[in-house]
Length: 227
Image (cartoon, rainbow, N blue to C red; front, side, top):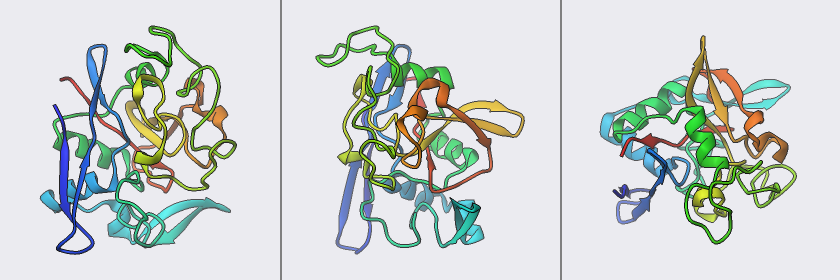
């Protein structure tokens, strides 16, 4: 089943369309791309939802410790209009990601589901060996990922302009950290690393717990589905 988002944005006469396909991985589906600004806007507009970053009037970036950045939120990730509405939605907490996934009849993937999708080629492929588990979402070698030592855009990037990796998924390594549903006390596990880290963090062992109410420029998500 295809999910197509149609939005009137920027100007009333500008129609923007975006499709985030579901990819079947064993007994579940996962979105090909990280959830985009366009998709999250659609959810927020239909439900009158406001993120904590919007309510508080700031997002976070790491400088000398975590520093507040005025007017940084998923709509204006760096305090101004984004270059593209198909950039990943960031400044989103675990709870806000969970609410979005429920809205589209999905859920956050478990870490094991996310890892299977990211590192094990379960689909027929001309590039990757079927049923092989790789070290990186890009294969045996760390390459073509938006991390500090590779593509190095020095910011998150439009998901439609990044290359496919294992299982045809995009940006499972680098770009932005992604929430999974795995919890430990008041924290939730994020996977895949972000553009701010080196490619060594994109391995399965690079996953990190973060406070579930945390939001920052480096963190986004994608959804999973039963069907």
